[in-house]
Length: 134
Image (cartoon, rainbow, N blue to C red; front, side, top):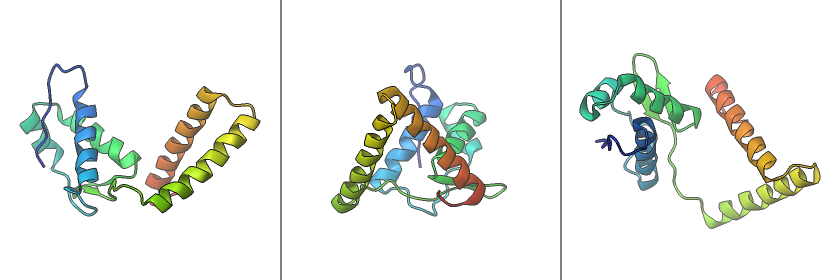
């Protein structure tokens, strides 16, 4: 995979890397099991610090999209394929019920977004710790 970093674009190189990898996952050019290029190789080709690449890979791991295996590399764990209409409808229905319950509990939009972010963060931490979703 070739990365292109627009230096001086106002978007950090780390965000650009994450965005490009997610796009490859959506388009299917990266599949579960694929190994991401070594951080040192990406850093050399894009002229960014190796730690910037590692930060991007870590972000993908937190989101459950990649797994970092020491001394082996970083591997894609799932794709970002589009949901089927049936799956999307089922998830939307459950999410709308949860939002309704959150509102009845007294949360406003900002509180709901904050609760969702916390749940995403905890889910990512659980996935990293146990290898499974909550």
